[in-house]
Amino acid sequence: MKTLSKSFSFLLLSIFLLSCSSENKIDLFNGENLDNWNIFVSSPDVAPGDLFWVEEGVINTTGVPNGYIRTKEIYSNFKLHVEWRWTENPSNSGVLIHAQGKEMIWPLCIECQLMHEHAGDVVLIGKGSGITSKDSTYLIPSEENRYKVIPKFEEVSENAPGEWNSYDITSKDGEIEVIVNGVLQHKGTGMTLTEGNIALQSEGSPMQFRNVYLQPL
Image (cartoon, rainbow, N blue to C red; front, top):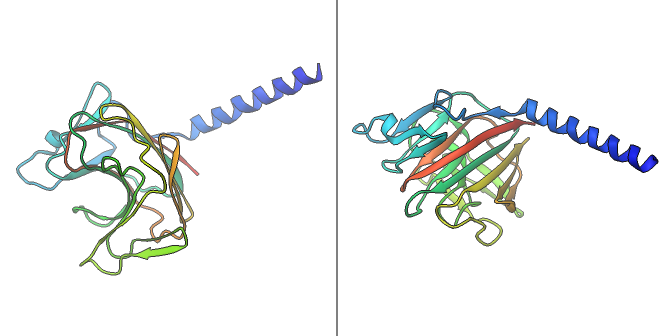
């Protein structure tokens, strides 16, 4: 009887925690439109809706020209979930967190890389972007050389092109954890950027995004 009572209590606690988690969840993509996002296109010859659009519950992008969708809201201290897949030959893309400043290619931010076979790399973009990873400190000191790639920890953990992948990115008080399909690919501390917009890139090939949401921490 005591064992059954403990099991029932644990079940109630699990349901309670799942309920709290669900209540805190913020859907960045509602499955219907991009009303929560601003669209930036690098070419004046391409309409925003021709670069990013929603169809059958997923976000689509042609990948060309470069651009991104960027949340209208600013976020800090969160666990972000993003799913993506390539619909043709895979190339390059990324998830930008703590994006700051004006709309440009690419804004001051920290990028969690989506380049094919490099998902899990962390890229510092813009003067002032910095992080400490594996006892090494990286900082972008100027706009003249505004990109720094910090390689992922493990072997490639992406699924085959055409299959869905998941990113789980936790950012809290200057610390970051990057998980690709359940594999810890990056971890860092001392991020110089701790709040800003979230953005999804168009950078090379057609791809799709779905289930984009975060949980505030």
